[in-house]
Length: 216
Image (cartoon, rainbow, N blue to C red; front, side):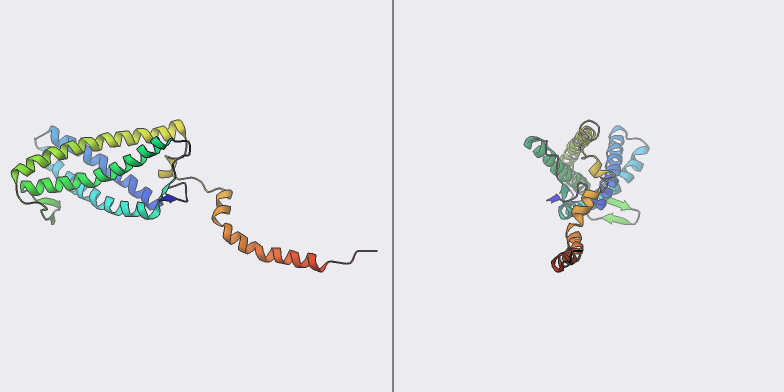
């Protein structure tokens, strides 16, 4: 659904940037976990799990909000293929944001590991204990994480192209937003302005209808 405003809903923008920080943190923590098995590993794992679950919760909030509030229309000068690629990449991003933590949750469940979010909050397993399934899901989780990283790089590159080269307002729609011009105010308040002007117009017609005697 296209949105009447050239900007995303403010709540959607806030969620976008909050999740962007969390996703980058989770990915770099994941890279650190893969590259070390030393003393930092338990601390990295203790951060990786709750951040992943938090991202899953936020994307489950963000997706309905996006569907309810709509998205700004893409620039008219984009080709149909470019618009399809843009929309498809967003669908894929949402799928990966939702799928990555779910796969991680399933992987830990199959491995028999507790999914500890906080000190007193442990998530229930969503799969039975199965080491073969754990090994398979571990590979899938790694592949999806690399795909996630590639999608983020592509998303960032596209945002910079729109913001620095094309300067078409797409990047602004997810950052500070567009200033409301007088024309926008007129469009937004159009029906109210018409209703307010109606009595004045009627009064003017009445005066003209009565007329005044011409001076001799």
